[in-house]
Length: 109
Image (tube, helix red, strand yellow):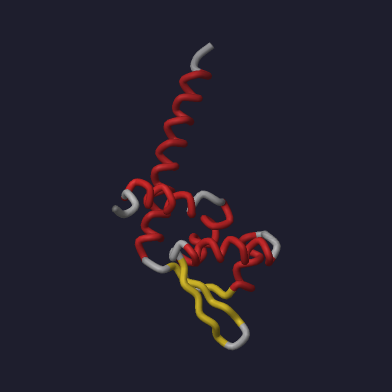
């Protein structure tokens, strides 16, 4: 018997559960990037970025290739960019709802 689908989904979302990995995926949703290009955008030490990229590679969310002395990364599937866009939309809705609750709470005194 294989691994249940819900467990695979949990592992997939676990791979997305770090802010650096999310930022990397956002950057790669725009276009492929060399590691050196991502460093100033992500704002972490090279070793930390390397660790996060290794996790994304291991979970097959990104793929890499070498050109000369540089390693370039790209998202493995365009649906990853779609997922990030849906997450942004959901968060926007949630935050809008919270702002409305805060306004209600402050209401007329």
